[in-house]
Image 1 (cartoon, rainbow, N blue to C red):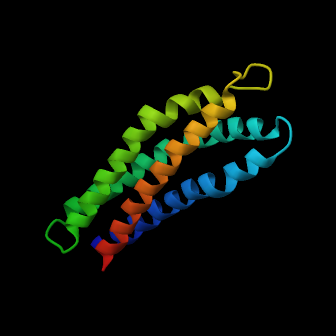
Image 2 (image 1 turned 30 degrees about the vertical axis):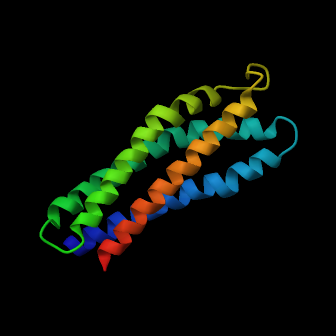
Amino acid sequence: MLNALEVVTTVVVGVMVGVEFSVAFVLNPILNALPGDSGQLGRAHGGRMLGVVMPVWYITSLILVAVWAVAGRHHDGTGLVVTSGALLILSVVMSLLLLVPINNQGKTWTPDNRPADWKEQMNRWDRFHYVRVAVIIAAFALLVAALA
């Protein structure tokens, strides 16, 4: 049963990392390159859509890691799992304090109501997101290492 939990947790966290990585290094660069207001409208829509899905995914990942840490507490690699969980907690705290406030504003913007500095705010969100991606990649890598 523990093996199944380990695999499911690693896959769930890994796919979440893939989504966040693709937002940072594929989706947002594409949206930023679109002409006119298309990029801003795309980012607003993405903020609304992912703003609903990702919190559930982050919390589910954290719960799975916690269950793995408790269920496997007598096995090798538990320290890696606990450290991974700490990094996931850090990513949630970063999200709540740094990224969500910007996203909550950006998802309501249209070409008619966006602030003059909207691009700077999106660039700020991107910088915070790059750090968050690095944190969750590290968390994922620790889970993979714990499987060995």
